[in-house]
Amino acid sequence: MIVAALLPAAIIPASAQKKNAAPDSTKATATTIKEGASLFRGNCSPCHGLSAHGGGRGPDLTSGRWTHGSTDAAIFRTISQGVPGTDMPANGFEDSEIWAIIAYLRSLTPPKQPAIVGDSAKGKKLFEIVGCSSCHMVNGSGGRLGPDLSRVAAARSAAYMIESIREPDKELSNAMLDPNNHYSVPLSYGTVTVVMPDGEKISGVALNEDTFTIQMMTAEQSLRFFQKKDVKDVIHEHKSLMPAYSESALSAAQMQDLVAYLETLRGSVNGEAKEGR
Ligand code: HEC
Ligand code: HEC
Image (cartoon, rainbow, N blue to C red):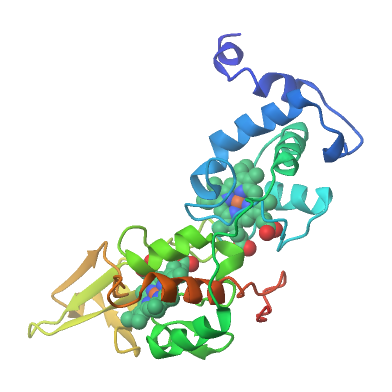
């Protein structure tokens, strides 16, 4: 069969062997681990980094901290069903392929040096002083222009957070409601500007938009609703409303403290926000 011949070699034995009992990931063979590594590289590394240490949009999977459960069965469920309401998608892999990925993840060791060595108590103060809290909600208090950061560390790697602060335009957060709901319109946190007939410009982030209307949170954090027929123009820009914090605004040491604080924000599985220690 031509199709099968074109598939990467690693996938075929996995889908061919159907096992009934759940295997134990710690007893996996080197071949299975290699197969898991290749599946991971192809499907997961854009978000979780090439060797699962986090990066793109996904958290580090080697830290030994599992927000959604650390047993083989829990990790299996996360991989197959995804995490609704987050960037983590559901997957259509064969069971044996998921087990191979779990075996691969179990074979990885956490980095020896912690990447972040800051003081989270200082970071928490900085979060207020520098003004992050004017735009970001943490555990129910703060601004509403940017995404809620109550569980940012469960969702993002430290590298991603640092990049979001130094270069907010580089990769905009997306505000999609539920990746498994095919009817919701994926929105990004890019800047949208509504131009009124008299030339007045109102900028903010779109909360909801369709062909006829747009609802937005303005930069001044008030909710506004517009009929598109009543406005002159609606301009979308791939640009963040968050200021870029260069080293003069936030030194390398302050960044370490700030990210050490963000690293404590992990929420909990059922979405109930709670601040870690
Ligand atoms: C589009 C980006 C994206 C892709 C692709 C992706 N993930 Fe994720 N993944 C995430 C995000 C974001 C989270 C954090 C979800 C949250 O907010 O709790 C996550 C969470 C997880 C978790 C739970 C971690 C924990 O702490 O419990 C596991 C396990 C995981 N991903 C494995 C995978 C595997 C395996 C693949 C490939 C088959 C994959 N992911 C593909 C973005 C992604
Ligand atoms: C003027 C409002 C504003 C201020 C001030 C602000 N942010 Fe943001 N932030 C945003 C917006 C809007 C986004 C979403 C667009 C983007 O990705 O840049 C964002 C995105 C982020 C993200 C990415 C979240 C994710 O899950 O993708 C992080 C992390 C973040 N901000 C941290 C901070 C920190 C730390 C500070 C203070 C040093 C700060 N922000 C100050 C508005 C702000």
